[in-house]
Image 1 (tube, helix red, strand yellow):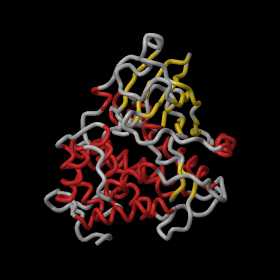
Image 2 (spheres, one colour):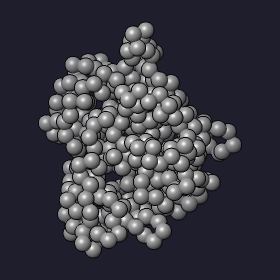
Image 3 (cartoon, helix red, strand yellow):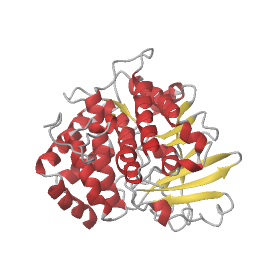
Image 4 (cartoon, helix red, strand yellow):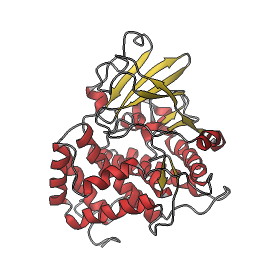
Length: 378
């Protein structure tokens, strides 16, 4: 399954996703080696065999306002040093798309730039979360893989004393525009109307303030760090044996708060834990997501690595809440409307009141209903 932004992750709301509806073979030239092609209005992905490994190719979708961001030379030079045993960053190699490369999945015109990444598997951790029984080794290794990823992310954030003059993360920027009243599709407009009813204006203003803080770097506005632009589980590709992973990066390099990258991944895990697995009653899977969240934070924050202290946990939790809200927005903007989103907004309301619920779980009443009332944000 893929996220609404087409980042090959999972749709934790239980919404039908683009891999359910838009999987196709590639062009005739690539048909013999194509494993899958899928995407949304935000991004299209095709996965090809490349000998014993796999070539992931990604290109901007037709509804995306900006293309992939360039990778500064110093980042290219530094990225190999970010690797740790069991995890590495992979920066894509630019190439041009050909007619029919992505089959029936909507893309921009032929000749658009795509990024190509050579990795070990044809599926991401997002896919594993969606169908963990089909990938038992990778599912069992999820916490360990994310702990190693946390170590890598720490190196990304602490390599440069002065971050490059890059724009704010695109996900936070899209959400900020929507919160200000700009809606790019009728479905996104409907989501805003539903959000005003179910979340209320005060919660939406709170979310807008958090977006501004992330873009400024820290809640006090003191600069920022180099960001991947949001660590997406759909961009973490496990090795076939689950012993290591590759993180696809470079398309959304940004400057902002270190909490953003951490929170973006934790928000995905929170969606699975609080929505998808909660609905199915899969408590073991929900517990695995909680373990993976703890492991990611542990890998990022444990002593023994250079650099300043990591971001405050409250800031990471707020970023995670924004990720959950941004997923709903991106689904309406790049896929369409589904009535399941209204129930999703109820969970988001609770998280806006109790952002640490993305890490610790939401409070539950005696009747077994989640509530976000009278918590640390009120």
